Image 1 (cartoon, rainbow, N blue to C red):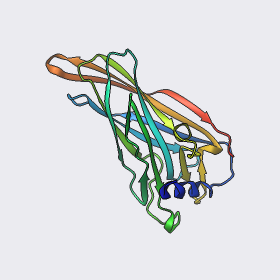
Image 2: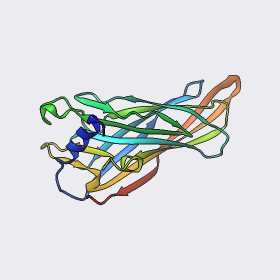
Image 3: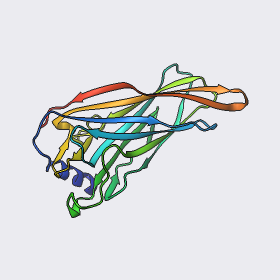
Image 4: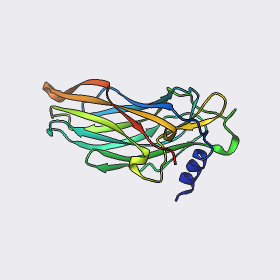
Length: 207
Protein backbone atom coordinates (compact mmCIF):
# COMPACT_ATOMS: atom_id res chain seq x y z
CA UNK A 1 0.00 0.00 0.00
CA UNK A 2 1.39 3.40 -0.95
CA UNK A 3 2.28 5.87 1.80
CA UNK A 4 -0.22 8.42 0.49
CA UNK A 5 -2.99 5.83 0.51
CA UNK A 6 -2.13 4.82 4.07
CA UNK A 7 -2.26 8.48 5.14
CA UNK A 8 -5.75 8.83 3.72
CA UNK A 9 -6.97 5.74 5.52
CA UNK A 10 -5.45 7.09 8.71
CA UNK A 11 -7.60 10.19 8.41
CA UNK A 12 -10.62 7.93 8.02
CA UNK A 13 -9.81 6.27 11.31
CA UNK A 14 -10.21 9.60 13.10
CA UNK A 15 -13.77 10.07 11.92
CA UNK A 16 -16.63 10.50 14.34
CA UNK A 17 -19.01 7.60 14.90
CA UNK A 18 -22.11 9.64 14.03
CA UNK A 19 -24.53 8.05 11.56
CA UNK A 20 -27.19 9.22 9.16
CA UNK A 21 -25.22 11.93 7.38
CA UNK A 22 -25.94 12.81 3.75
CA UNK A 23 -23.15 13.46 1.25
CA UNK A 24 -23.37 14.59 -2.37
CA UNK A 25 -21.04 14.56 -5.35
CA UNK A 26 -22.24 15.97 -8.65
CA UNK A 27 -21.02 16.87 -12.14
CA UNK A 28 -21.35 20.15 -14.01
CA UNK A 29 -20.35 20.08 -17.73
CA UNK A 30 -18.86 22.98 -19.68
CA UNK A 31 -18.84 24.04 -23.32
CA UNK A 32 -17.39 21.93 -26.08
CA UNK A 33 -14.55 22.72 -28.48
CA UNK A 34 -14.77 22.10 -32.24
CA UNK A 35 -12.27 19.28 -31.72
CA UNK A 36 -14.77 17.38 -29.59
CA UNK A 37 -13.42 18.14 -26.12
CA UNK A 38 -15.49 19.16 -23.11
CA UNK A 39 -15.05 19.11 -19.35
CA UNK A 40 -17.12 18.04 -16.37
CA UNK A 41 -16.28 19.53 -12.97
CA UNK A 42 -16.80 17.56 -9.74
CA UNK A 43 -18.39 19.26 -6.73
CA UNK A 44 -19.07 17.94 -3.23
CA UNK A 45 -21.30 18.86 -0.32
CA UNK A 46 -22.83 17.43 2.84
CA UNK A 47 -25.52 18.39 5.34
CA UNK A 48 -22.73 18.99 7.88
CA UNK A 49 -21.12 21.90 6.08
CA UNK A 50 -17.40 22.43 6.54
CA UNK A 51 -14.40 21.61 4.35
CA UNK A 52 -13.04 18.85 2.14
CA UNK A 53 -10.67 16.37 3.81
CA UNK A 54 -10.15 13.46 1.39
CA UNK A 55 -11.80 11.28 -1.20
CA UNK A 56 -11.51 8.81 -4.07
CA UNK A 57 -13.62 8.58 -7.24
CA UNK A 58 -13.58 7.54 -10.87
CA UNK A 59 -15.59 8.33 -13.99
CA UNK A 60 -17.52 6.32 -16.57
CA UNK A 61 -18.69 7.79 -19.89
CA UNK A 62 -21.16 5.71 -21.94
CA UNK A 63 -22.49 6.30 -25.44
CA UNK A 64 -26.25 5.89 -25.57
CA UNK A 65 -26.61 5.13 -29.30
CA UNK A 66 -23.24 3.53 -29.96
CA UNK A 67 -22.48 6.00 -32.77
CA UNK A 68 -19.84 8.03 -30.98
CA UNK A 69 -16.74 7.12 -29.07
CA UNK A 70 -14.58 8.39 -26.21
CA UNK A 71 -10.91 8.68 -27.17
CA UNK A 72 -9.46 9.98 -23.90
CA UNK A 73 -10.30 11.26 -20.41
CA UNK A 74 -7.85 13.28 -18.31
CA UNK A 75 -8.06 14.73 -14.80
CA UNK A 76 -7.01 18.08 -13.30
CA UNK A 77 -7.05 18.78 -9.56
CA UNK A 78 -8.68 22.08 -8.51
CA UNK A 79 -8.73 22.09 -4.69
CA UNK A 80 -6.84 25.00 -3.16
CA UNK A 81 -5.05 24.50 0.14
CA UNK A 82 -3.02 21.83 1.94
CA UNK A 83 -4.12 18.91 -0.25
CA UNK A 84 -2.12 16.12 -1.82
CA UNK A 85 -3.26 14.16 -4.86
CA UNK A 86 -2.48 10.46 -5.24
CA UNK A 87 -3.46 7.46 -7.37
CA UNK A 88 -4.31 9.38 -10.52
CA UNK A 89 -4.66 6.15 -12.50
CA UNK A 90 -5.57 7.78 -15.81
CA UNK A 91 -7.68 6.66 -18.74
CA UNK A 92 -8.34 2.92 -18.84
CA UNK A 93 -10.15 2.83 -22.17
CA UNK A 94 -13.78 2.05 -22.98
CA UNK A 95 -14.92 5.40 -21.55
CA UNK A 96 -13.55 4.77 -18.04
CA UNK A 97 -11.13 6.87 -16.01
CA UNK A 98 -9.63 5.03 -13.04
CA UNK A 99 -9.51 6.31 -9.50
CA UNK A 100 -8.27 9.74 -8.53
CA UNK A 101 -7.57 10.34 -4.87
CA UNK A 102 -6.84 13.38 -2.74
CA UNK A 103 -6.21 14.02 0.94
CA UNK A 104 -5.78 17.07 3.10
CA UNK A 105 -2.24 17.26 4.46
CA UNK A 106 -2.64 16.03 8.03
CA UNK A 107 0.66 17.26 9.45
CA UNK A 108 -0.61 20.60 10.77
CA UNK A 109 -4.07 19.79 12.13
CA UNK A 110 -7.48 20.57 10.66
CA UNK A 111 -7.56 24.29 11.56
CA UNK A 112 -6.15 26.89 10.92
CA UNK A 113 -4.44 25.17 7.97
CA UNK A 114 -5.47 26.16 4.47
CA UNK A 115 -8.56 24.19 3.44
CA UNK A 116 -11.33 24.49 0.83
CA UNK A 117 -15.00 24.76 1.76
CA UNK A 118 -17.53 22.30 0.41
CA UNK A 119 -19.28 23.46 -2.74
CA UNK A 120 -16.05 24.43 -4.49
CA UNK A 121 -14.84 22.27 -7.42
CA UNK A 122 -12.67 19.33 -6.43
CA UNK A 123 -11.32 18.97 -9.96
CA UNK A 124 -12.43 18.41 -13.53
CA UNK A 125 -12.31 15.65 -16.10
CA UNK A 126 -11.56 16.57 -19.71
CA UNK A 127 -13.34 14.21 -22.09
CA UNK A 128 -12.41 13.82 -25.76
CA UNK A 129 -15.10 12.45 -28.06
CA UNK A 130 -15.80 12.15 -31.78
CA UNK A 131 -17.01 15.63 -32.85
CA UNK A 132 -18.57 14.32 -36.08
CA UNK A 133 -20.94 11.76 -34.55
CA UNK A 134 -24.49 12.47 -33.40
CA UNK A 135 -24.30 11.09 -29.90
CA UNK A 136 -25.50 11.50 -26.35
CA UNK A 137 -23.01 10.62 -23.64
CA UNK A 138 -24.02 9.54 -20.14
CA UNK A 139 -21.38 10.59 -17.61
CA UNK A 140 -21.35 9.00 -14.16
CA UNK A 141 -19.10 9.20 -11.12
CA UNK A 142 -17.83 5.94 -9.64
CA UNK A 143 -17.66 5.59 -5.86
CA UNK A 144 -14.29 4.85 -4.25
CA UNK A 145 -15.25 1.45 -2.75
CA UNK A 146 -16.54 0.37 -6.17
CA UNK A 147 -13.10 1.01 -7.63
CA UNK A 148 -11.00 -0.80 -5.02
CA UNK A 149 -11.84 -2.43 -1.66
CA UNK A 150 -8.91 -0.58 -0.04
CA UNK A 151 -10.98 2.62 -0.18
CA UNK A 152 -13.62 2.66 2.58
CA UNK A 153 -15.40 5.81 1.37
CA UNK A 154 -15.77 8.29 -1.49
CA UNK A 155 -15.75 11.64 0.32
CA UNK A 156 -14.69 12.73 3.79
CA UNK A 157 -15.33 16.18 5.27
CA UNK A 158 -14.62 18.14 8.44
CA UNK A 159 -17.49 20.05 10.04
CA UNK A 160 -17.00 23.59 11.45
CA UNK A 161 -15.90 22.08 14.78
CA UNK A 162 -13.21 19.95 13.14
CA UNK A 163 -15.03 16.60 13.49
CA UNK A 164 -14.48 14.19 10.60
CA UNK A 165 -17.26 12.36 8.75
CA UNK A 166 -17.41 10.27 5.59
CA UNK A 167 -20.07 8.56 3.50
CA UNK A 168 -19.45 5.13 5.05
CA UNK A 169 -21.45 6.55 7.98
CA UNK A 170 -24.51 7.55 5.97
CA UNK A 171 -25.67 7.98 2.39
CA UNK A 172 -23.90 9.22 -0.71
CA UNK A 173 -25.73 10.64 -3.73
CA UNK A 174 -23.79 10.63 -7.01
CA UNK A 175 -25.34 12.87 -9.66
CA UNK A 176 -24.18 12.48 -13.24
CA UNK A 177 -24.75 14.45 -16.42
CA UNK A 178 -25.63 13.91 -20.06
CA UNK A 179 -23.96 15.64 -23.00
CA UNK A 180 -25.39 15.56 -26.52
CA UNK A 181 -23.05 16.28 -29.44
CA UNK A 182 -24.71 17.54 -32.63
CA UNK A 183 -22.32 18.10 -35.56
CA UNK A 184 -23.04 21.18 -37.62
CA UNK A 185 -21.91 22.20 -41.17
CA UNK A 186 -18.27 23.19 -41.36
CA UNK A 187 -17.30 20.60 -38.72
CA UNK A 188 -18.26 22.98 -35.91
CA UNK A 189 -19.82 20.86 -33.22
CA UNK A 190 -22.62 22.01 -30.99
CA UNK A 191 -23.48 20.57 -27.63
CA UNK A 192 -26.49 20.51 -25.38
CA UNK A 193 -25.93 19.70 -21.76
CA UNK A 194 -28.18 18.68 -18.95
CA UNK A 195 -26.64 18.05 -15.57
CA UNK A 196 -28.33 16.74 -12.43
CA UNK A 197 -30.39 14.24 -14.41
CA UNK A 198 -29.23 10.90 -13.13
CA UNK A 199 -28.61 10.34 -9.44
CA UNK A 200 -27.63 7.27 -7.46
CA UNK A 201 -27.84 7.10 -3.69
CA UNK A 202 -25.45 4.70 -2.02
CA UNK A 203 -25.62 3.46 1.55
CA UNK A 204 -22.72 1.51 3.00
CA UNK A 205 -22.49 -0.20 6.34
CA UNK A 206 -19.59 1.01 8.44
CA UNK A 207 -17.19 -1.72 9.56
